[in-house]
Amino acid sequence: MQTQTHTTTDRHGYSLRFSPFEANHMLLATSQLYGLAGGGSLFLLEQNPNGDDGQKLAELCRLEWSDGLFDVAWCPYAADIAATASGDGSLQIWCGLDAESATADGQQTPKQPLICLQEHKNEVYSLDWGEKWNYHTLLSASWDCTLKLWDCNRQHSITTFVGHNDLIYGAKFSPLIANLFASVSTDGHLNLWNSLDFAGKPLMSIEAHASEALSCDWSHFDRNVLVTGGSDGLIRGWDLRKMRTHVFELYSGEFAVRRLACSPHSAAVLASANYDFTTRIWNLERGESAQEIKDHHTEFVCGLDWNPHRAHQLADCGWDSLATVYTPQCLINTELGA
Image 1 (cartoon, rainbow, N blue to C red):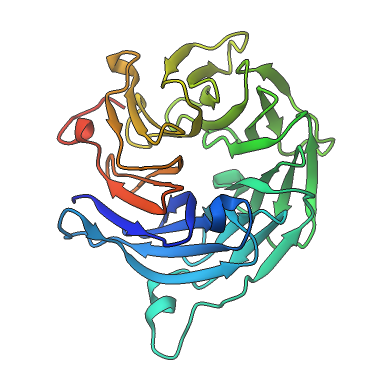
Image 2: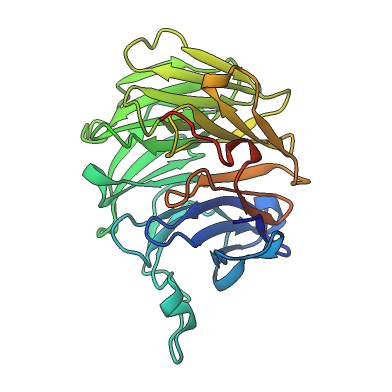
């Protein structure tokens, strides 16, 4: 499959996610005016698996919210449900996000969310929907310096977690350890938490970066490994068994690392979305330099995700209103050790 793109005129991309159920479907969360003012739009996009290089992604439906949308997460047990995080401090849970609902005669995807969860006092910048052990829970991270755990069937949060001293940019559940999640903040710290600790205090807090920490992700293969990215342009790897210092470090340039995505297809591969308008592909088995640098964006790259259904297929989006799906050249026809 070749590169496919979609342009969201007057909407600037913040986050995208491939569907865990449909290999050709993805959601794209966007904001007006770079997220500084105006509303937000959620797009359901579809790939053509036999499409030509440069072909446009099909837009199946578009949902609107009154404030910017900064993150999106699919429900892990229902193919047509997803949640978004907004600049007004709320979370929205939407339904009808499938091809059948979007295209069936006489049916339309509902224009209003099923549920709106409102407790945060500032922008919600990160959202994760738990899988396996936490499949019914949502995790939100906000610029009000708190994280909240939600039961998606209840109107109020279960727990509020306090332990950062500045804006929280990201939080992710571990895919391999029950009830463990990580968060990063502009205070430079990486915090680890137990979602069952209703006292809401971190298990551990370390200074991951001397400057702002903006992104984190977990390995899909080694339960002890996670990575962080900062405004210092550094990507650092951490091992839960020896957290005094990082176990590896990659330098992506002078500008911030906005988002990280560990590959679900290879233990050695990860991608970074950067404020120098690039997406970089790294292979830890091949040294400390990026194996490929994609420069098809003309603004900050903010969203990044691997397709769990297709080996090494990647998607990114940015403030230039462009979303792109492609397979990095360095990973095509390459057998990478898992």
